[in-house]
Image (cartoon, rainbow, N blue to C red; front, side, top):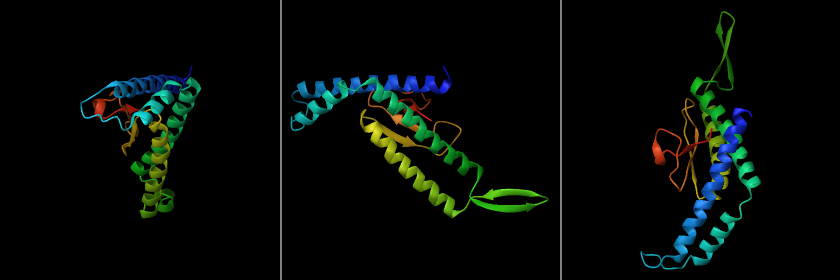
Length: 164
């Protein structure tokens, strides 16, 4: 088993576990009385609990692979931005060529991050999670902030679960 396969399997197992936790939390919310819960969202909570409980493992595996694939693209952009590898070719002399990062590259990077964030958040919404994108390629650039508070980063629950 390759490390990418292991990472995807771990992430899929985490997502399955997270969806079960969301279902339990929503079911507890339905049963709870008082504490400010007025019961207006009962039908929505029941629907979300049932949806979370019926999540198929193949869906979680596909979601894990999609998170990793989209995250890899975000990581590539972060590395390019960090290294200043823009689209414009420049000649430095003595046969040396390189790429220059400019405002057009920054705009393309921001647009790519927005598209990636929308795709990532659509997947994370199924599990009651949120997504955070960071710009430093030395660590995880895509992190899931899980409702359960699970984490695999030094930042703790507020920093979330590193994906890519």
